[in-house]
Image (cartoon, rainbow, N blue to C red; front, side, top):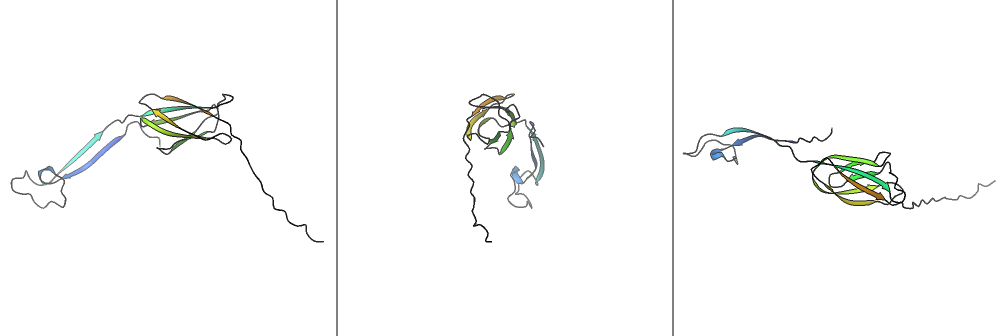
Amino acid sequence: MQPSKLMTVLAGVVLLGCRGQPPSRPVTGCVPGDPGPAQAIELSVSKKLPTGALLLDVRDRQTGAGLALVELRLLSLARTTHTDKKGKARFDSLPPGQHALATRRFGYSIRTDTVVVGQSAGQVARIALRRQTVCAYSTAALAPAPER
C-alpha cells in the first residue's frame, strides 16, 4: 500500500465529564451548579499534511555512467529503494525537512549524505559514487594424501 498524500487524523469519541473536563474516573454525578451529566462528543478532523518527493540520479564518479541496482535508504524513515538501469530512483510522500540518505552498491564506496526535501513536485539529488577495490580472500585446507 502506497502512503497517501492525504493523511487523515481521527480524534474519535471523547467522553467529557462535569465542566467539560475528561473524567479521571467514571462519572456518577455532578457537583451542584455544574451544567449536567457527562456527554459524548464526536470529533473528526481531516487535514492534508505537506509532503514532497525526492528524485535521485546516481552515477559512477569516473565515467559519469548511471549506476543500476544502487541501494538507497532514508535512515530516519526506514524506507529503501533501488536505482533503475539508468541510475534513477524516486521517493514519494516524504515529510519536508532534512533526511540522512545512505547509498551503497557492490564495488563502490558507501556514502551517507543529508538531503533536503521541500513541499514541491521533487528535488533532484545527484550522487557520484567512487569505485572501491573489493578484496576477496579464499582459504584452502590441505589434507595429507591418502595412504596406499
